[in-house]
Length: 81
Image (tube, rainbow, N blue to C red; front, side):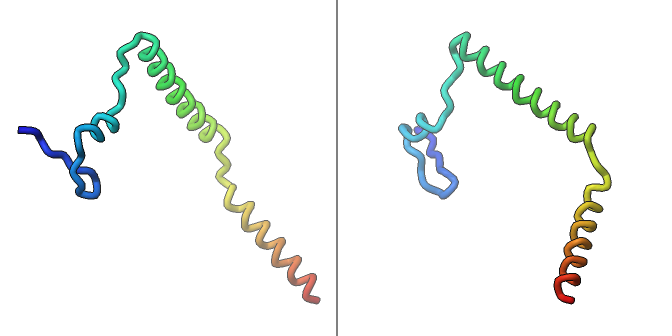
C-alpha cells in the first residue's frame, strides 16, 4: 500500500508533485565538486564576515545616534527662536 503524504496545508501530495519537489541527486563528479566548492565558499564568507564584525566592532556605536539626536534638537531650537 502506498504511503500518503500531505503538504503543509493538509493537501495530499501526488507522486508527480513529490518527484518535482525532491532535489536532484548529485551523481556527476563535476556536480559534487561544484556542490563542495559552493559549501566551502559559503562557510568561508561566514567566517570572514564574523571575523570582520568582531575586529571592527565599535562599542560606542549607540552614542553616535544620541549625539545626532542632540544636534537635531539643537537645530530645532535654533529655528524656533
